[in-house]
Image (cartoon, rainbow, N blue to C red; front, side, top):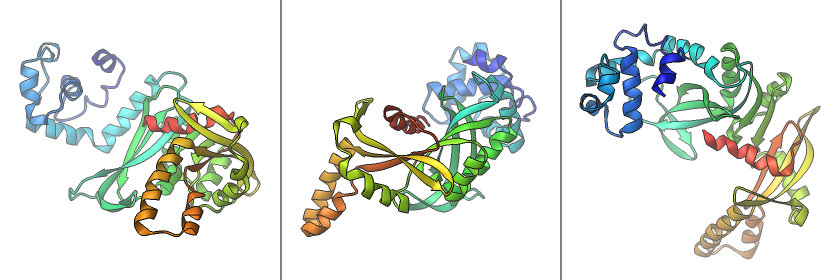
Length: 311
């Protein structure tokens, strides 16, 4: 790994950094891989490790590491890094299938990127990290950070455009449900970018497709197993955007439905729900819809969507 870093050209952004050198970078990477302790112990580790012989110019004193991390996080260093890194990815740099997701990084530091955010229903202070990986290899392609109150739908096209600016064209994007918006889907169509994404339950088309297709879904021809999971899944043509053809894959995840049944039955018992309320609520449990801009076999659509979990 250290040989790869040394000879891949990735050190070029480091050479201009005030407080660091290539030996410091590689020694820090090895320390983070091998140890779970804080930075203040890094120099003690280096002094008693073979890394001191391999990288004698490394400076892992706590203060130097802090200064180094500040400098290496500068926007200019990041831009130089991606310019050096992207050509090292296997395959063609011209066009990628990408997986894109974001996550909240909780913190209470007082700096411009921290903001109050609603993440999965929980209110807190956080920074938002948007992360892109290459589908074929799982290698990271790109990341960017933004304030914690930035919603996913406002960052999708901007991220794709930033990749384009770095010379990476997107041919397929696998997205999580929060990235779905009519305007972004329209732009993906217009840009010729294929997509696969989960449809949110609050969309009108989700409710319509569930009503139309679910009643006769549980049959042998719709039964699909993959990676130890079993689902019923059925394909239907649809239009997410008027005039643009898409495919909806309506499914029931058997294990998830079973778990949701148990949780809801316990809740219904405690709150003494009527039979009518229980019956109506059960209609939505365990059901999902994945939409795609192109037709895919039943046994590929769910694994394709779940590859996003590599992130």
